[in-house]
Amino acid sequence: MIKTPICDLLGIEYPIIQGGMAWIADADLAGAVSNAGGLGLIASMSADAEWLRGQIRKARQLTDKPFGVNIMLMSPHVDEVARAVIEEGVKVVTTGAGSPVKFMKDWLAAGIKVIPVVPSTAIAKLMERSGASAVVAEGGEAGGHVGDLTTMALVPQVCDAVSIPVIAAGGIADGRGVAAAFMLGAVGVQLGTRFIASKECNVHPVYKEKILKAKDINTIVTGKRFGHPVRCLKTTFSRELYSMEYNSGVSNEELEKKGLGALRLAVLEGDEKRGCFMAGQCAAMIKEEKPVKQIIEEIFAEAEELLLGGAKWVKGR
Image (spheres, helix red, strand yellow):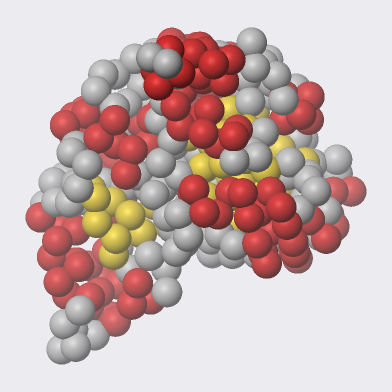
């Protein structure tokens, strides 16, 4: 079995973290991933502290294994959520959509391992200097909020830039992606889209169906006009939003109104006309809904075979 420093750092069996997907990464999914040997994450998204406390307590009822919380730093409730993870004794925090520097001192004093998601080497270095235990180098192939660099280019550069462990994310859905990430220097992976198509994920069936039927060119990036690009599946909604974004006659206020609550509508209602179905470019690689435990076991069995020399191109020579 593949063991890396991330396993020892986080107390997990497999070097895999479940992405902190808003409206998707709840206590049920986090508990399932943690029970299967990975690190499950609860997404705090834009929720308040009391909602998060409830999810943390529910996760503790579902698993006795380590799990963490993903904090979306653009949340209007970020200050109270940052305190809540301390008060609830959360051991691991990942962050996205901003800099966690203002919270790092208190989190570290509480013994929390902080793992920020980073889109560049400069931010990775800043996070290391600020006391991060590791970083997630996430390429633009990922679903949700994305950066400019691809996973293939970003991961090795971040690995060269910092001395703390690097976790690769973006476009990874199977053992081949995991093996590639390790060859690039990462010691762990973060998967999001793959876990949407799991038995334990509570998204609307329409959401899962769209993931399972996706083709390689079925994602689109919106939000560049605001400086916060988001990758999602191509739908009536996302195409309309994309068109509006590049229409100079459409105001920023109209765009913001169009996108308000769109992810929630996709996750909870499967609304194809008004919902934003966030997903990474690896969606086309996912053909079957499976239990989380099976997903993780199959991914690492394949990765181990490849890393030990069982790649098809090796066998043929």
